[in-house]
Image 1 (cartoon, rainbow, N blue to C red):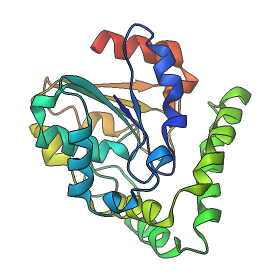
Image 2 (image 1 turned 30 degrees about the vertical axis):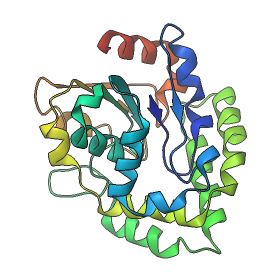
Image 3 (image 1 turned 90 degrees about the vertical axis):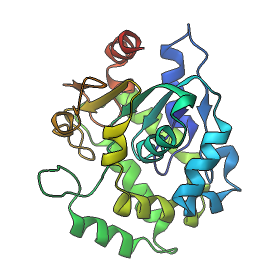
Length: 238
């Protein structure tokens, strides 16, 4: 089961399914996104969002989350640990803001983004977000083309859905819940990632349940930029 990130839908995680032909991979559109775009109300309450996902996921699955969806994936594993065999986070974090001894986004920057993310500016800022995804030195022409083509359907995502995601990024702290998980966890990072610092790999190696790996030649989408290594690392873990 694979969850996508903020401002995207399952279009962005389709390449992951092709890396594991031996496994049944389900790509889920989160409430408010893609084919579930008519359910933005679920996004506005984080507890409701986690509960909605939990009752939608098959029991005994391996859960993979990319980017912002790692927050709700961790909460799902906390609420119903019996549902999941393992958790894999890809360029995600249990807490986005920078804090004491915790790498992350500048709090002032998060507040600025929240303030400027108005209905009239939402489309423009979403375009900037996708443009930033294309800027990494690790991105080939094919990767940039994939990002641009996959970003087109996202322009229809409702403002309420996008705003709720930014609020979760600013205010949700899942560090304690992540540390307390008893299921095996793998946390993947990109050394060149401008959104999620790879330095987090050292911070979330809480115990033997938590493994980490840093892709040296990738930014925020290692499954696109280092697909063979990505598949090998995840397959070895599973």
